[in-house]
Amino acid sequence: MKKLLFPILLFTVGAALLVAFKTHPPKKNKRPNIVFIMSDDHAYQAISAYDTRLTSTPNIDRIAREGMLFSNACVTNSICAPSRAVILTGKHSHINGKIDNYFPFDTTNVTFPQILQANGYQTAMFGKLHFGNNPKGFDEFKILPDQGHYYNPDFITKKEGKTQVKGYVTDIITDMTLNWLKNERDDDKPFFLAYLHKAPHREWLPAERHYRQFTKKTFPEPATLFDNYEGRGRAAKEQEMTLMHHMTWGGDSKIKPENMDKLGLKENHWTDKALYKSNLARMDAAQLKSWNETYDKINDDFVSRYPTMTEKDQLKWRYQRYMQDYLGSIASVDEGVGKVLDFLKANGLDENTIVVYTSDQGFYLGEHGWFDKRFVYDESFKTPLLIKWPAVIKAGSKNAQMVQNLDFAQTFLEAAGIKPPADMQGESMLPIFKGQGRKFRDAAYYHYYEYPSIHMVKRHYAIVTEAFKLVHFYHDIDEWELYDRRKDKNELRNVYNDPAYAEIRAQLHKKLAALRIKYKDSEQLDKMYIEKYKELEARKVIFR
Image (cartoon, rainbow, N blue to C red; front, side, top):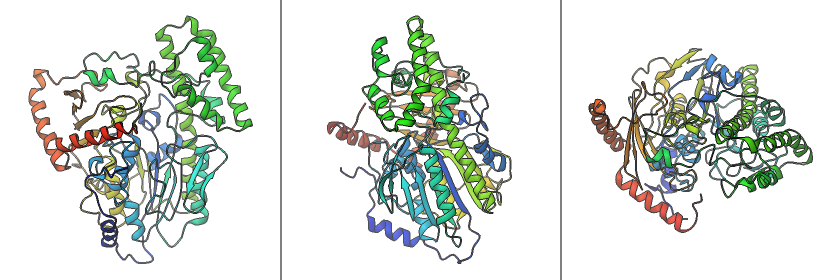
């Protein structure tokens, strides 16, 4: 595959940069350890420190209680692999080249773990990276290939090659993390530990102890579950991510293929029945027996009720099925976080360890009738962020400023006493940690690229301030949207053409143009990436 990156760095240049950023810290120092915990598709609405209506996450909440909760944290590109590339490089997608899940990650990019490692940090990664089989800058890693599996998953390892591990993926990743902390950590070095969960990524298969519990629960519906998208443009109407029409019956709702046939249910995607079969094929006999004991009852109940269900009844049913498995998958993540926090405290590591909990982006939990992410609308644009560092951050702090995943690299490097590379594009959050960052960022820049593809969310870029959001949808449309974030929290009314917002619209256009220049994005790059994407389409790399 061609290098599709702009600009392209030579490997030798990258190596030279690492040398340039290497310092000479003393052998004994007070540099902080860093534990970076990231789940996949974990909506902030599904963390009880943010909202108690859906579920309880007492261990993740501990990080907020002992540190700082960010209520306005956001991403630059709401999709899995690009978000991770932004975090690792401290650069927007159009600069690091990983604009979507199809474009390759340019391994000549210098990442912050490489710089930490070059400056005396011991580094390790366990869990889901999503791209690349050989993470650079890590002394040890065990990662899932691509999306990975919930049951009996395969792992790519640095020392043992590819291996399959029996058990449930969240528990396995937690055990690997704890084993490294207990048995492989060098007491004489500060460490950076990436503890990265697959859950709660689609298709949401909880552990046995949790699906037995969560499938019996009923959850409150979001106010916009039955949104009809009036007052907005084509982008909101033409997506393919509704619970009713695009969530799969087999893979997502766990209806058996034979029951789909019995009821005349058509596959909502060509992977529908195949995903159901492949996910359960990972289970051994005991796991499958337990699974069927619970999900056969759900199937039987649905088969009996379906003939009398209206479309509204079906949507309400699908929402509950979604929440049962999605929130059930999060329960094991919360348990694992608790075990890691307990270890840090029991071993005297908690005071000088930065602990971060975040997700690669937000997620729709039925809002607007949707699942998945991608849009710049708040549920996917905003992401959970909780950080504790007792030596620096006051316990129980809250912050409403617009920090982004773009900021992690600079923050970690500066916390370690390392000057970040000049071409990183984020901001260090250290002033916020110390209660000094009152004017951190007045506007965030966002750009989504993966179209046309699965879910069919159109390409768009945006400027987001605390008060407003200006969005440009482009490619096969040319539409602008403007939302008043304070008066219209559910983003239901596009006021772009409202005369009352004319002055604000003009101001935001100017600020957006300035941000595009600041971050080195442009219409020329937009067109270039569209043409490169067409090349992948022609080679049938893109799928829907």
